[in-house]
Image (cartoon, rainbow, N blue to C red; front, side, top):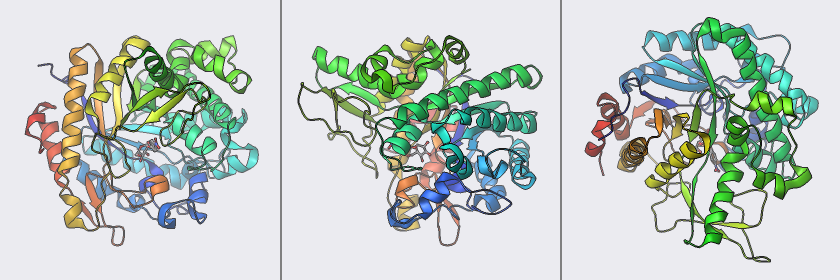
Length: 464
Ligand code: PNW
């Protein structure tokens, strides 16, 4: 059986807005997510992330938990408005110092930091000033923020991720309006995506030109995609499934690995899809040192007959009515209704491997959400252990087929603020009581620890 590499990254992922709390402490500015969650009616139960896991104050305890878990890597994000409360201009020393402490604490615990620069908490000031991701002005501001982070933390941080899941920012934030900034538009997602890609490329250019030689790190991006299985073997359903993968993953990955948007998108979106100049194309192409993949679920895709009905839903295809998403309702679903389909990960990894020329892949998020009313129920989570074990087993098969898988980050360490779902559902390996802040490791925490200790080979011992 194929073994995972000796230097395989075993980690957990988190995001600043979902765990830190302290939304207005230490000189932090507001983010679009602070504003969105504080407005009534946007989040389940009107929950906010004002306190969340209070990680801003409990970070030492959280590092101790990770040490106990045995991870060798931790992916977290920096809150841009903690460093630049106004989006740009003068940095906030107190905010910057928080991440100095966190990084030093991780290194002391033998845990390699993986830093995401943008996990959705855009400084509200930039949104108000020029519309945030809808304006080309964001490109300079993002790369200046990135430059500051490379300069300040790059002596200790060797793994950078520019953006988390641009698809979500664009479609959920600017298309469907269920994420901040809550816009509903058919045109804005393509514009926001365009400037996210250019901001990524400019930040990478900055890293490579000014820091890489000295700091010897690497920089990439994390993209999310479900696997899309053709509903039937018919050629129409097969090409519909391919089209939906191009619209979800190819939208961002094609420019970064191949230098431009997929032809299928250019043809269908016409003028609505901005175009890259020749210079921009060469800046984009090859601008990710690795392929960060966030993967949770799968669905079927069916071609829609001309004039037929089509739905666009959660993880739906945005921008064309030619395809319909059909839930895999013969599979178990998690608390969000996402189907648990381990082999979808293998198929997606093979699709990426073939289309992008065998990139080094890190699973930068994968995991599952459960519902639980009390801590006793929450810690008894064999479904989560099984999810991790089964998805990992399929990833191993992908490695046997040649995929260059280099790391695995479970989403997530702590139960946390799950965006529009608030605290209703729980993704953590560790239960958090949001009344008291008390952390309690779940069974899956111990199972994941065993898995890591055997470098992924203990899969068969996972609870079923
Ligand atoms: C990702 N969808 O979000 C994020 O990177 C995490 O912050 C988040 O907590 C995790 O996955 C679990 O949801 C997503 O609707 C949110 O398709 C929504 C969707 C996908 C990913």
